[in-house]
Every structure is written in C-alpha cells, then in structure tokens.
Amino acid sequence: MSNTTPKKRTPVIVALIAVIVLCLAGAITGGVYVLNANKQITDAENSANITPAAPEPELEENPIDFDSLRKENKGIYAWIYIPGTKVNYAVCQSKNNAYYLDHNEKRQKSALGAIFSETYNAKDFQDPVTILYGHNGAKNAMFGSLHKFSNKDFFKEHKKIYVYAPGHIYTYKVVSAYTTNNRHLMGAYNFYNPDHLAAFQEQVCNPASVDKNVRKKVKLDASSKLLVLSTCNTGALAKSARYLVIGVMTNDQPTK
Image 1: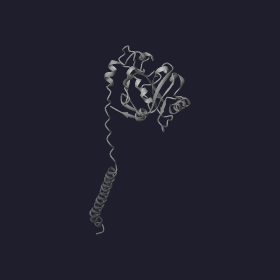
Image 2: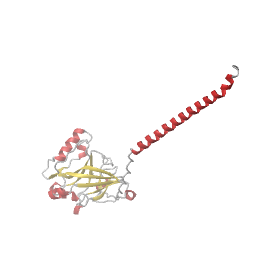
Image 3: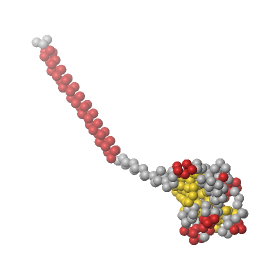
Image 4: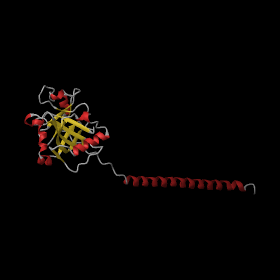
C-alpha cells in the first residue's frame, strides 16, 4: 500500500503546479497590460499639453525687382525712398568711389550721377554708420530735395526713410538735418571705435549748426545703426559745406 501512494499523488501535484504557473503568467500579462495602458494614458495627457507651433507668417513681397535692376547694373544693391521728397532711386556702389559722381545707375555718363555709397561701407546696412551720397541736383533731382528738411514744419511731419534691399526693408527715423563742413566723414571718424562713434552720435543729436532741425527724445547707443544722407549745400556754402539728413534704423523687415 505504501509503495503505491506517491504514484497516485503525482498527477495531482502536476496539476497544481500547472494551475500556479498559469496564474502567474496571467498576473504578469495583466501587469504588463496595465503598465502599457497607464503609459498610453500618460502619453495622451502629455500630448494634450503640447501647444502646436504657430505657422510662420508669410513674408511680404519686396516691391523692388533687384534681379531686373542687376541685369542693367550689378553695382545696384539697394533702393531709397523718402516720402514727401523726390528721393526714389537705386543705390549703387563701385570699386571706384568716384565713379557715380558722373555716371548714373545705368552706368551712363551723367552730370547728375547716382545715389551711392563708398567701399568703406558694407552693402548690408549693418555698419554703425552708413553714408549715402547724391548731388544737389537742379529741380530737386537726386538728393536736391533733402533740403526740404531745413523747413521746421516739413521736418516735423516727415519722419521716415525707407531703404529696400534684397530680402529686407529697412525703416529709419529721421533724427536730425543740418549744415556741416565738407570734411570726409569716413576719414574723420573710425565708426568702429566706441569713442569716435559716441562723438559722432553726440554731433547728430546736438549739431553745432545754425541751420539745423533735431527730433527730440531720440536716444542713440552703441547698437544704433545710422544712415547719413549727404549732399552739397546751396548758395555761398555750395563748395565749403555739406547738408546732412540722418536717420536711425527702427525696423528691419524680412521680405521674399
């Protein structure tokens, strides 16, 4: 009798072990399912808290067709427009700084020349001071109408200068307009020298000139980008003085 008892109990023990294994497997599977479900819930909650990025605003079209202009003259790199004046011209630069004194924007010989900068300036208007030159032309041609800024009412009402360049529209606020001597500013100042720049900015805001108009409460600092428009003076001062209109960049708008 005692020899047969273990044999009878073996199937029962095997059955119990199988049941235990199945229970453990079910528990593990259930636990994994719960963990996965909890992770999915957490991921869903996190996704709900994500703010979608706003779509990029569409860039404005640049009104100047620089591709066409450069087919006529690769030296054209910008365009300047001043409301209330006749200033609405291409801006050029040549390796020869005197070239556009007697050549127009089409590279034709012309006593009126063109609006231009010298090679001391980069063409991206990011220098501390960018200087554009233009003749004081008859009938307010070229920079002749800059002299309108000598009128206090005109100066008060006309505050902006616009410069168009490939990919940009730069807006400047007119700070001052005044008569000064005819020294070459790029030779008189190193605008990357902080002391020179500060001295020039002081002159811009407080010019030592009887013939001046200044916009109050304009503050300039080391990060300011100035645009100087320089032309000949009139009458007895024509050969000994320059007339300057100076603005500070207030906006750089990207364009297509």
